[in-house]
Image (cartoon, rainbow, N blue to C red; front, side, top):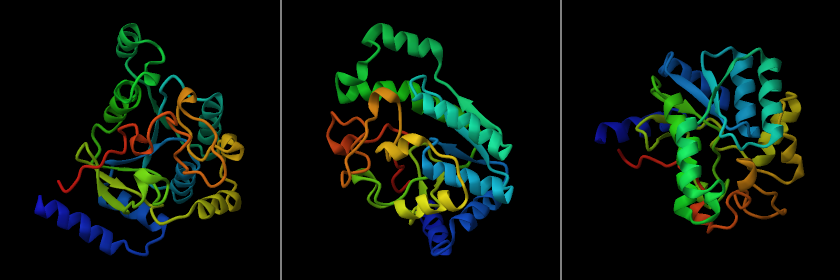
Amino acid sequence: MNDDRERIAGWNEALAGASAGDVLAWAAETFPGRVGLASSLGIEDQVLTAMIAGARLPIGVFTLDTGRLFPEAYDLMHLTSARYALPIQVYSPDASEVEEMVALHGVNLFRDSVAERKRCCEVRKVRPLRRAQEGLDAWVCGLRSGQGVTRERVDVVEWDAAGLVKVNPLAGWTEDGVSAFAREHDVPYNPLHDRGFPSIGCAPCTRAVEPGEDPRSGRWWWESAEHGECGIHDRGGDR
């Protein structure tokens, strides 16, 4: 465990001040053939996809289709793959697990309690993610510090709850910086971002937010802010 902590600390020290592109190149070199980008299709992940494609890095891209995404997400998925000539591997929940969950708890069980909402996220998101991560030692995602009360501090390299290395190349970026890069490089992004949706998940669980509100306040807004994660970004602690 101490070795793991020291390795993560050493990587973060070595990558201090590195550009997002350099972090991606480091990930591809450090975990050859065993690292992938988990894209939520949010603007941060779209920026990372553009960087991976532009540098021709050997980092595969995958996304999760929960079955309850906004129509705009499917359009963006198709557009992105075509724009960058980049295959995006799509992982869906097990149909029998969804059917059983809905039969026992209802189609909108996530409204009943935090526990039921997490049950839905587990079936529709976390389990497909774990299948996508099979064979990987590390995964890349678009987390940034300051994205909300559950993401006040994000390091470039972390452990996750599944025991994999998580790489966050945009950890130190601001929202304005992400938007500027997307404009400069004509990165396709979800039009819902321009309609007050800084964070976009499943359609029934996401709403627009007002200027100045916590960026994550549009996700599961009927719950307390400290519950504002689905389980995908649970951290693995000190190992």
